[in-house]
Length: 329
Image 1: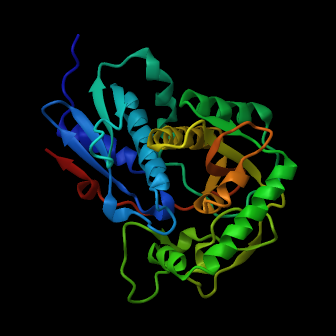
Image 2: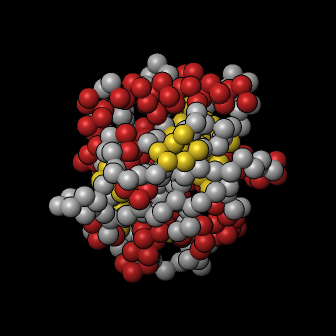
């Protein structure tokens, strides 16, 4: 039986779920196009929301857009559709990242529907986590989530975790001494000071988290570029639980696979009662990125460093209206 074509209200609902995805500096670098004659939703990168300093090759943009693509898949299955995804469908248009045809549901994606409640519960938490260990079955579930999207998730040992903390701090120092990169970060943060324009993107002050005390924090401190009067401080976990998400290759298609795997891991973690944050600082420096790899994991290219644990949920960051990111043609 042929499924009826997706209509405009249904497309809007799917995109509303898609844009809850995380993105670097909450830039939300995605655009969607709905084709009512075919019922296809296209995903495009937004060249006006790139970060030339921190992300010159647009790797992080691909990850962010792919996270939104995964959310779209989850939402579609939850709504009774079977999403059929084609990555990079037009070799002549590098900003055209994926097309999603909505067909009759199949059993292939049935395991996505249980992740739907986590879409709006998942937030990046830049607050301290507890020192509580994560049970191995939960970590196994996260490894399995990455594998289902064609990627690997490795949990480094204590020695390599210490190495990663050093790399994060090295990357922070490099950013502190790079005026162009500092200016780019500042442009995507806001403190809510009187007269400052309210925006539906970027990192608001309430999402900065506290000033960290101790060497264990791996989250990016946006307060380094936008000091906030009266901002509190806190001791972060001494030995954070870190996971490395990696791919065999390092081309745009690999980045799109990694972004979907990243979001699947984040949603699975949220469903299992964990809180998460991500860090990409060491991955933004070509000379540091190879050393992020865990030599014992056999992972070729690390695409994201994910922090896992138990602690306070981070606040929801703003999202642009669907009308600003969805065109119907």
